[in-house]
Length: 207
Image 1 (tube, rainbow, N blue to C red):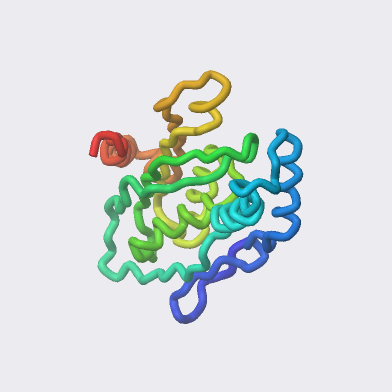
Image 2 (spheres, rainbow, N blue to C red):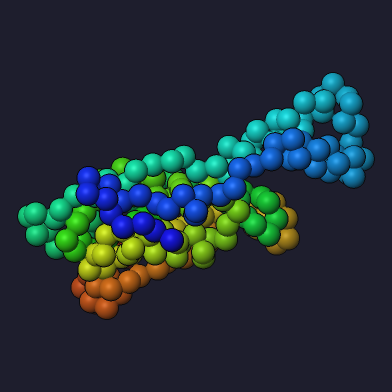
């Protein structure tokens, strides 16, 4: 749940939504058990520190940095699209614990408030640093923008390559999955929708 905007103009994410702390000791033991299960010698020189390294890596991948998303009054009445293109992100697939990575295009049509541009990237990172599926990640970013800014419209488009598809199963390296969430004017107004899609059509491979 999101808390209301403070008098200082800072909208803060409720602490109850923060992920629980990672038990690194338990995680190290679990990694050691996994290595034993696949027949690896955990006591060998190359693997002795692996449980600790893996615990540290997962703690980093699954701990979003705290941030304070500063918002400002839309005093000039700007009513056009604001789009942050090709924000790099990475996350972990909750089904296989393998990474997926790509770019996020995040845009909105302001209402009474606007947000600092760098904070759009921070929002993507906040929700990506978790066990995820791409569809939910897309919706969470859109939901956050709606709740914090009350904008006239929201558009989020993610494109990513999933290692669970590239390295296993169908084994199709380079295949990319695209998801989108369009709300308000970006969904309902044909011209605004087309503008958003045109601005976000180029992938990271085109740059």
